[in-house]
Figure 1 (cartoon, rainbow, N blue to C red):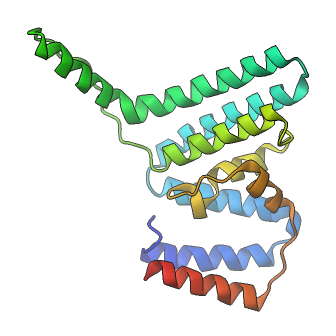
Figure 2 (cartoon, rainbow, N blue to C red; figure 1 turned 135 degrees about the horizontal axis):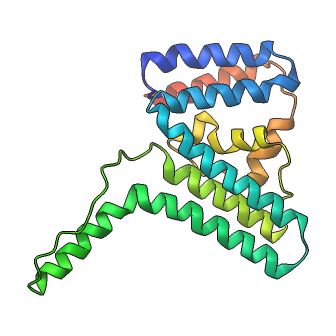
Length: 201
């Protein structure tokens, strides 16, 4: 689903109206469902990938937050970095790296074809990978407490307005906003719609 598509023109007002109609305690669930629906419009199978990256970052954040042992905290952080960046590498850079390696080998007269993977690049994979990594680093540095609610953390990773085009949001900025009870404010809504219209233009 593209931001400048007819689908989004229908999707966004419905989500916004339901958001203000829902009780505050259920709003994060609505936004999470809407965000996953938005992402699955590209390719439903890649919801598993974003969920995996989310689970890794959530687990590492919890483990880092549970210990004061600096060495152990570092191990959990490194594990999170390796797995998340490994997934990003496989989907985004593996074929490029293999192609470059083949070119270098061929320069020296070796006829060798490296293997490639036939994978469709997941939309927004760089954004949500680096967003989860920034969260793990924030928790490691003590700038952010580990988020206990997996659903709200999953929303932080998949929040549809910035999922596929950024910016990469710091956990210290975005996560607390999901706990704030927002009321309908006509002026804020019209100001926001004007900004969106300008962006589309």
